[in-house]
Length: 238
Image (cartoon, rainbow, N blue to C red; front, side, top):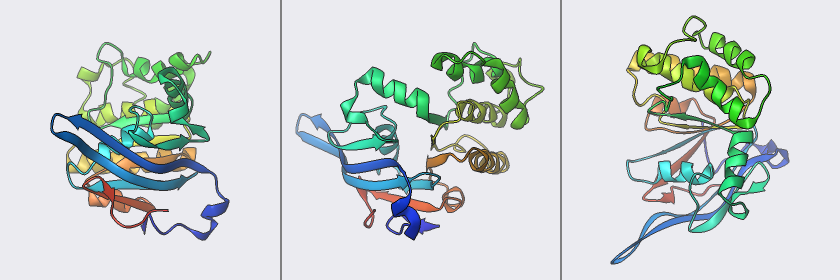
């Protein structure tokens, strides 16, 4: 695993999926601004696997939200696969996410009223694809849930729910996948199985993976490390 400041020599010729410049996030309070992130800058190249680590409250999840365009920065800019998110309105950022981004969350974020198959079909439907059931069935088979297509989230274990979430994230074949503590709600054995599945799916799809984690074992699986300390990068980042 390499530190964020040490890029492979060929990185200069590779396409940056994420380009982060002078990123800051400040929240106004009665007695002055609260600084959550300050002067964050780095590049993430196509095909990279990157772990964002740091103590609780260091700004990891806020940074992930800014990188995905779920929140807007107070200063600086994020360019995602060639599109500068600060130049887009909320609908424009949503379009970029729908076209290029997948998400995996600690709390799974499955819709309880939809079956496993319907949850995985949903992002394809929202994108306007004509064939939604075929790809959804195929990837659910791939994650080992071919016999659970008609089950609702409440009928699935935590590990099975996260498998559905992984299938939903990868079904659109995103260029970039964000994962926020993907094993945080799972026991050690189940979490390890999810890690193996996540990295296998990622390698197969050639997706760029950016994950937030406090799990050193999970972080060690990534090629690069971005460490935050009190809202700032710990060490220089390229």
